[in-house]
Length: 101
Image 1 (cartoon, rainbow, N blue to C red):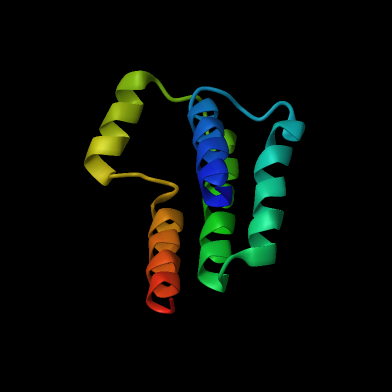
Image 2: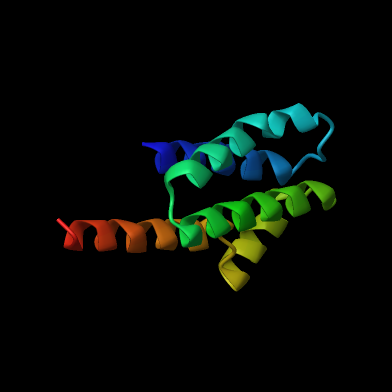
């Protein structure tokens, strides 16, 4: 549930960052709260991936706004997915946990 909440929060922020700059840093509180909770129970790899995803969102907010056409090109040409590493780390952690049962 925690990882799903992080994915939802980070995805919403990433989508918002594509056409806006960060004018209200308080918008990031939810994401960083979830990272703090991940720090309590997640593996080192999952935590590092969550932090990396958050960093990419901050970087995205610092870029000029992107048009839909520009976004489409970036996604399809470079396969940008700021949460791919996080979701892969979660899958790996889940497989490891299931093996230990």
